[in-house]
Amino acid sequence: MLLHFENVTKSYPNVPVLRGVSFDLRAGEMLALTGESGSGKSTLLHLIGGLDSADSGVIAIDGALMTGLDDGGRAKLRRDVVGVIFQQFNLIPSLDVGANIAFQARLAGRYDAGRCAHLADLLGLSDHLAKYPEALSGGQQQRVAIARTLAAQPKLVLADEPTGNLDEAAADGVFALLCELVAETQAGLVLVTHSQRLAARMPRRLNLSNGQIA
Image (cartoon, rainbow, N blue to C red; front, side, top):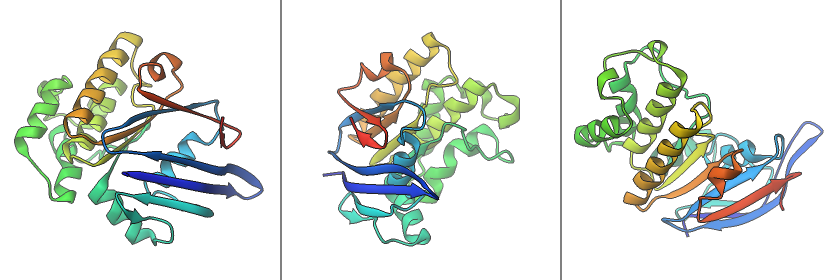
């Protein structure tokens, strides 16, 4: 079992967000997570990625119990096992595209120049490697964020609206490529999306409603 999520709760001051959510994900499995705005999708993703801690319940990734880890422990697990594709890109403005793509792989000790070049080519970034993020369109920055995550070859990929800044045709292409590249490494994928059209193309779907699996 790659991911075990059992009876997890999370609240912010006077605002319950997750109310006892449970599900499992096996290696190589792809899951779409849908739900209306405010249903807890991004919070759930942040808990899996170790960007926040749960109030109660059990979260285990690749056999390691995340519950109870401090910030450093969660950061190590995220670096070694999890890759996050952020909705807001989170690119490093002082690094060019090539260095941004390589950044996470270098941190994880899994840098492979050939893989970085391959990803850049597949995502249409080969002609932009010397540019800085500010010179790119939103869609191009999203592609860099995807390449950076996949370059590190994580066992679990978390994607928060990874095609949200692309038009429908481009979104379809990037979505298909993302699934193909994740499948190549037999990683698991949890994809948060508001697009029912894209979610319908995933092998498995969960819908969050009012902090619970509907």
